[in-house]
Image (cartoon, rainbow, N blue to C red; front, side, top):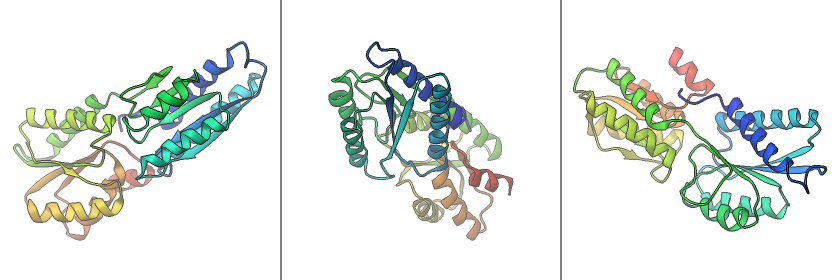
Length: 263
C-alpha cells in the first residue's frame, strides 16, 4: 500500500479545514460546521478516514474550537448523487468542506458554483478536481505507486510475461495516474501489457472479468488493480480455477485483502 494511513490523512484534512475556517474574524467565537462529502463511503478506507476526521474534531474541541462534522456518502456508482450531497451540505450552512470526489470533472462544477462562489474553504483529497479552486489538496504520488506495483509484478512473473490492468476509473485522475505509472514501468521492464479492461468497482465485476481474461488469454501471468475490491473478486475466480500461478498486485489494501495476501 503506497498511501499514508487513512486516519492520518483524514485527521490532517480535518485539522487544515478547521484551521482555515476558525481563524476568520466572524467565525472565531461561533460553533462551526464542516461537511465531509465522500464517494465509495462504505469501503474500509473511507470509513477509516471518517473516523480520523471525527478524532480531529474532538482534538479541536479540546482546543476550544467547537466543530460539528456532517458526513455524506454519495454511493459507489452515481456521482450525481454526490453532487446533490454537496448542494444539501451548502443549504445546511457548513463553514468548510472536506471532499473525497468520485469524479474529477463532475464534482468540480458544484465546488466552483457553490463553494468557490460563496468563498467557503475547500479541502480536497484522493483523486482531486480538474477545475475550480481549493485551499489544500492532499494526494498520494500515484504515478510512483504504479511504477512500484510494476516493479513488484516484474519480480514475480517471467520476463516478457503477459499482464493486464483492470480499470474501474477511466474518468478518475488518481486512478489513471496509477495506471500510467504501472503500464509505463511494466513495458520498460519487458512485460507484455495487454489492453486494459474497463470495469465497474465491485467484487462481481472482478470475478466476471477475471473469468473472461482466463478464456481470452489463458497464459495471462499478472493483473494490476487500482483498488483491492476488484482484486478480491478476481482472487475468488483464480482460486476456483486453481490458477494460483496468476499474480495479483493491487494499490489499496484493506484488512480483508491483507488476510488474502497472508493466505
